[in-house]
Length: 469
Image 1 (tube, helix red, strand yellow):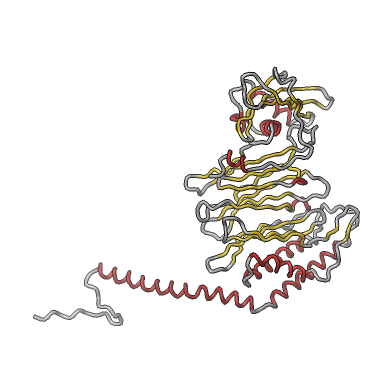
Image 2 (tube, rainbow, N blue to C red; image 1 turned 30 degrees about the horizontal axis):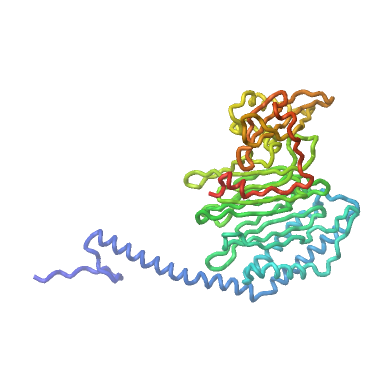
């Protein structure tokens, strides 16, 4: 008996499957063939689309000329406005008419940078070409006006332009610009990442715009990127000080950014602030486990002594097991000298410093008293009798520091002597407290600070803090 013919569905090249399982297999195969074809077509077109985009930019140099003309008109207007200021006027405030124009200058500079990168300029030649472009945009603009205080400048003039390649990150490129503010400058950082197609994409535009006072801007800008432990597992640290016209004492701000998973951008996760003497500059170093800052400052408790002393700020990143949640912990027991250590100990909560000392009786009550007296406007504190001495039975280096509080009538209200011992590289601990000088320390050698201090080195400190891993 002949086998009956199988029915064929009209308009389909395959006969109807004999079972539901075969039907599922055929449908899955069809979807697989369809998506393979779509992805093949898209992957072939993507480089062509990027190449076409770059070709359009290269073939239209008129756009660059238009940007340079707009920048020239803007800088000329800012220069003429700046010339109307009084010669002896200290420009702490930024005029309202200038604020949006400074933002426009930044954005025009960013567009020039992006166009140069799109036209194929490599990082090695980018800086030279940008300088040529800025020179063209500044042609015909009057020289800045010099005031009685020595400020020879005008708003918006480009005074800083740097192109840097971060170490261990060959796919990243940073450009730093700085605009004149009369006293100080306003610096911005632009971070780019090179895609597999060779196109540079803006990853971060870190600017401060619309500020009313120059102290809200940023100068002395530095940045560092940690080595990549895994792809997209690194962090960026940006540091800067606010500009000012008359004082060398200011804050040093540090911002920490990390790659945002699933997005081609960075997100801000931490901000820290310390006080420094910015005339001496500062040092920033980054490691996989955190970062450290070296600077010069004064002891927070010693308002009667303005001698500059080296300071350290060591920050360690503590992350969850999956590395998705991280927090920043400062390790303030790192210091270059006992006075800096004691000043940091007395300036923080007991929960943060209780581990800095051994089982020393009376320290907690003394710490509470110091915080109470330090909060009073009628009290002044000072650190005196900084002496190197040798206590019996202790072989490690030892110092004695006297902490005093007096009122506005110069009457002594409270004082204590602290015995401080060095326990490691730039690490100290308190191992004694007394109302009187310790035996063996009264005649100790008085320690004087260097008249020309230098910035501290950070390599040994970062290694001791365990930041290298």
